Image (cartoon, rainbow, N blue to C red; front, side, top):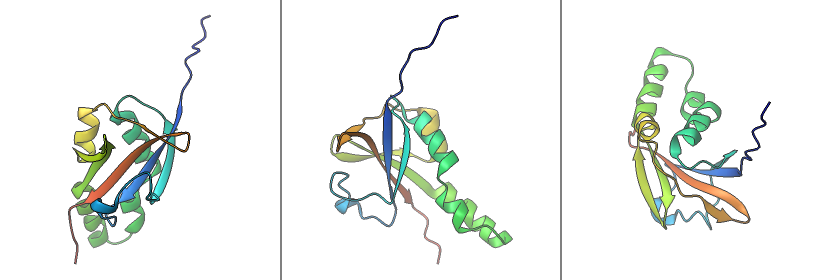
Length: 127
């Protein structure tokens, strides 16, 4: 029996939400809204898959009536994902597009941690 001795490298996804202003979003100096611990990955899809299982701010905001379910659907479908690469924010698109494209990602070192800054932006404004 062969043992898989591959070691995973722990990382953190720093999540910023659409309330954050792009000009002020420097991952080195701005505290994230949330942090997700995950293994470092070369591509985006594994990180987004884990993020979707563990962090769902939209679903937790609305959970009762038909109207709120519809509003939840609108918010989820309008969410865009950005990652921080080489000192600038790069759009990856909606969740399904970002997972399908599975782009290469770049992790930063912040305080000895491997960090992937991610900005979640809703382009839909309700009311």
